[in-house]
Image 1 (tube, helix red, strand yellow):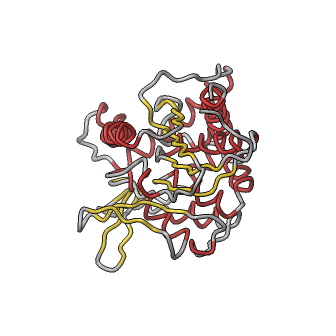
Image 2 (image 1 turned 90 degrees about the vertical axis):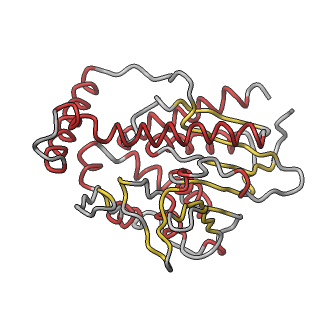
Length: 291
């Protein structure tokens, strides 16, 4: 298959928390080659990046993400003692509205779909109309981490619970090709070397996270439990979504599959935005150069 000038792209973006920032690099690489993204479907972080791209404000989001350091990330996390989740998620979305205003999905310049899951009916919920931010907020609600969204008798959580690569929901058009970006791939990572200063800053960030654990984990818990709380949740969720994603990719056989390692960064390393964008760009180049 040859990638033509002005090639139409039906783009599918997977979930993956901070790893999903790599989607930005993939999109930029596709555009640099003259491709035209004609439709988007996404889950979780994929729904966020895809939705913002559809509004034409991806550069603003990128600048916002690049401005984040570890302390800013922690300040944007609105922790709660709600039994249904540890993080509300409202603070970061409110902050993002300063850069990217909300708008009705049906008014976007290209077809867009965001996927969430209703825990009550045990079914996927696909947003193709209504508030863009509401759709994104529902789609990113990782169970036990973000509080779910209640909507007309439904309890909505992260779409990755059932469908982390929503290939069946991207709108197709004549002459297009489907490009799937899977940021939880079970492949070795390619990471740039860290400076001593970066290693030192990361250690400080991890120390602050551990201090947070002390407030949410009972004192009777073992030290091992305290240190592994988030990683246990994220790794369990990742393993489940990975296996289902692999099955769906095999089922749909997309024309182009761009894989980003699930070990490219940790689930919550949003302060590594610049690194992840370049990781996505590099992964896209490696695949597209072979077409």
